[in-house]
Image (cartoon, rainbow over all chains, first blue to last red; front, side, top):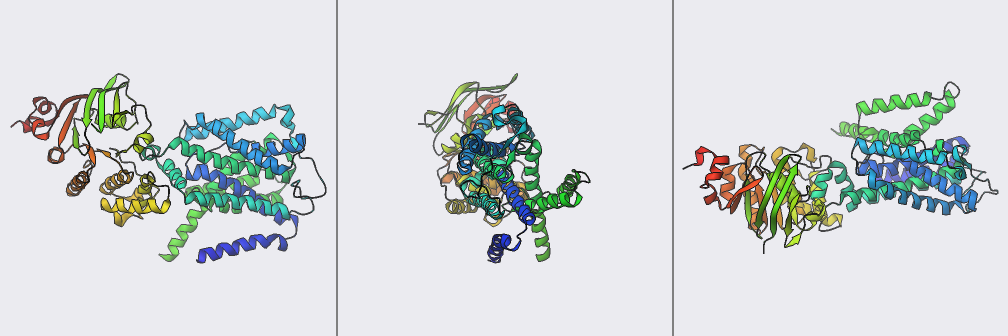
Length: 318
Length: 240
């Protein structure tokens, strides 16, 4: 009951945030928290619950970004249609690539997902129609309109769309946690053979997990393109993006509902503010701080910040 | 008609023949023991029946239907449950959640699965550990957990790989009683067991394996008098 009240208060605070903070920068930080939070939430469905550690999720993000952007730039469609098409394409791609890749387990699966990511990035770099290595600009349209998914005057609408994406991911995760498939995902993560012996179709559950994860990740890709107005293979298809998505979830706590959100709420401001404060002193300093933080967390509390909070809570009660 | 019919099953791993031309049947409601020295091919036989391994030759039939090429989850859904010699709980889940994975075979409703899992845990005497993490259970408790999980799938045939192996002597009678109770409900069981006293006590029929081959298939009273079984397995002490 207390928890429910706290969550509603948090949601109310998040909803009124743009009314209080009218400057672009705080809104931008929140938008990035929502975006990376939603990506980590999506990744967590496959990796945290189903135990399949992907280091290629930038592919799904890139499919979302490129599909909508190319449909806007080359066919003049609304980005919302592109968002739906991108998510659908990411799901289809995930199912095709999952057949060979899911035959591998553990580290080998993770390595294969890196390979898939590198292959797709290389293909797009060499694909001139899609902008190649130079990337693609989203054509600027004025005035602001929901139809065109472009809001130049204020970031408030971006803020609410990003928040919507995060809430969608959380709702899907919550629903999965309370459904048979959520239990099956965890059984697959814990022991595939034991799960199979109890009637769990392991391959089908993995395919289901990656489909949901890929679709949600692609939605974030479209949002990114409409927010930044420029995409290229480096920004939306790189291995470093895949790793960042993984880091956010791992830092917060994998296999938990709120872990990825907590991870994003810590890492994104850290990255954005170190970029602002330490900008020019060397681009990598924020990454150094990330790295140090991840190492500290991994050594002290492998269950992530959520696990740390649970332990502190127990300590106080005990 | 037989519930399970294994006919001419052969399995090789490289140059090693784990099972050679194994043939036997299990009738509904029967309790059959499988004995044999280490490496005789007992666990491989379970893997072949439950789809974890595919035989190089021979067939496995369930109610007359050829299930030789089916996957483990498909065979589970046809009513064959098993435990593993090397126990495989889902360590990061609670005892109750472990059993729910089995119970979901009969229902997709989480509440109904939870109730069925509670009933299965009560049946094996683990109800008080329902919310404990499975990774923290003792060996005896984990054996009961695997049993509960298998039972929750609602099987017609249950394959138990070493019921009393690895547990202390004080726990053995309870596990044996449990197997007897399950058999009394009409469930067919095939039990791999090293403890000869246990197997002679509970089994209606015993299949003896040696180097992957069936060397005897008879009631316990005859098995203990079979010269080949005595030679390869029971040893001099059993020669009356």
